[in-house]
Length: 79
Image (cartoon, rainbow, N blue to C red; front, side):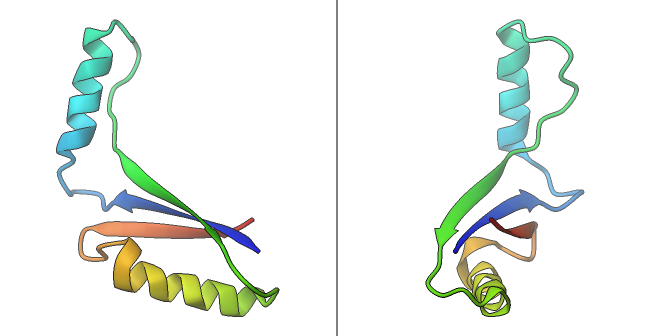
């Protein structure tokens, strides 16, 4: 089974890397972009076929390591 975890900063948390990317895009002449927020994507391969167990294991991984839940949100997709 495969899963994807997308981690993003919570609304209101400053994103200096996103601002740097936004500035770089403008300096490269890319128009029409008002704001950039950056994040992380993790693609995971899991043993077994139990979807509920997989989601529970991934949630535990996110809460313990993959995301800083004080400043980040995460979304789990089973692929």
